[in-house]
Length: 126
Image 1: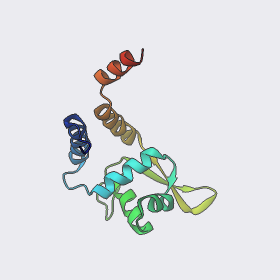
Image 2: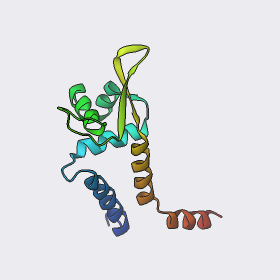
Image 3: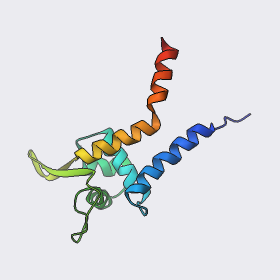
Image 4: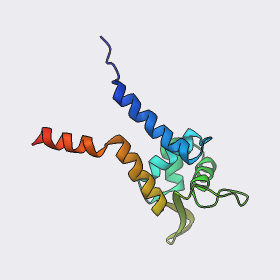
């Protein structure tokens, strides 16, 4: 019999996707993947982000711009990340989470591992 996905696991994924959709109803999945990759490796370069996601560096730059304070053409971004020039290599941009990005990550963590679950896991392991 094949492994079955539990209903609560699917519900958790749906809640995470809904959290991204609250940020922007038309948010491309590539932006969500970019955010999660940056969150996983805070201080990643745009080139490394492109490599990990197997996308062009120009696409990674656009994703970072959309997730930053200002998107393009003066349009407001999501202010979840910031890109700064690497002081050792000026052409290289280093991407980190903003305070708002860290708060959103905490929201996602609470969805994936709600406070009630943390207590239940602690009790089981005791």
